[in-house]
Length: 363
Ligand SMILES: Nc1nc2c(c(=O)[nH]1)N[C@H]1C(S)=C(S)[C@@H](COP(=O)(O)O)O[C@H]1N2
Ligand SMILES: [Mo]
Image 1 (cartoon, rainbow, N blue to C red):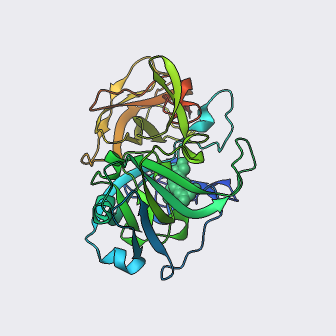
Image 2: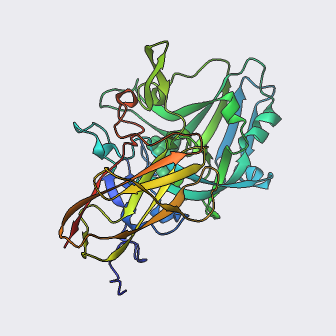
C-alpha cells in the first residue's frame, strides 16, 4: 500500500498541540502514535507554573520532616547510588476532558495528555530508608521548585509551589523512583530537569517535577494540588468526601483512524491504539465498529509490562456502503475493571475514561 509521507503514524511527526503557552502545556497528537516509548520531545507537557531553569550543580534534594536524620543530596551524589529503570505510562488526570458535556473548565485535553517512557533513578524507598522514617509517619510530601499564584478560582493562598503527597505504603513501593533520566537521556527542562519523582500506576500529578524537597509527614497532607485541584468525590458510608486523585483508571484509546478520517470503502483497515490502567495488567481490548452495538476482541501486541501501556490492533474491513461509521474501543483489566460508557460525575473533570467515539467517513 502507498502511504503518503503526511499520513499519521508514518514516521513524520507534526509537532505537539499547544493547549496553553504560559504556563507551557503541550499535547501529543495521538493519531501519530507509533513508538511504544515516546521520545522526550514528543511527550506531552503539563505545567502549572513557568518552567524553572535549574543548574544541576547548584540543585539539591532535601529530605526532612519525621525522619531520624535529615539528608541532602547533590545531582552527582544521587546519580552514584544504585539505580533502577522502570517503564511507566504517565497520563494527566485531565486527559480526555474535551469529551465532557457540558464543556468543562480547565485545559481541554483530547486524547494525547499521555505518554510512555523509561525512567531511570534511585528508588525513593532507599532514600527514605537512609533518612529513617519515624514510626508516626503516614505520608510523604514532594515539593517542586516551580512556584506561582493561581488567580482563577479556586485561587491559591498567594504564591505556592507545586506539591503532592503519597501515602507511606506507595512511597515505599519499589517502582517509585527519584528520576534523572528519561529514555536513557538526562531529563529535559520541560520534563523536570534535573530530577523528578515518577509514580508508576498513578495519574501524572503525583510525579512531581523539579523535585527539591521531600518531607515525611505524621499527618495527611491537604495541600492545594490534592484538595482544590486533582481531588474527586469518594463515597464513604454514602457520604461524599474529597480524596486526592491517585491510581489510574483502565482506558483504551484509538490512535488510528483519527476523528473524521476518510477511509476507502470495502477495504482492509488496521485499527490501532493503546490501553493502560495503573498497576493492573490489561486483560482485554474490544472494538466496536457499529456505534457500540456489537464488540469484537482486538489483538494485544507485544508483552504486558507492569505500569506501561499495551498496544493493540484490530483488523477491520471497511463497509462497502459509503457513509459515516462510529468506532469505539474499551479495555478490561486483570482485576475485572471495565471501561465505563459514561463519565462518573463524582470524578469531576478528572479520570475521564468513558468510551469514546471516533467517527469516520467511508467514501
Ligand atoms: N513541579 C511540578 N510537577 C508536576 C507538575 C507541575 O506543574 N509542577 N505537573 C504535574 C502533572 S499534572 C502532570 S500530568 C505531570 C506531567 O509530566 P510531564 O510534563 O513530564 O508529561 O507532571 C506533574 N508534575
Ligand atoms: Mo496532570
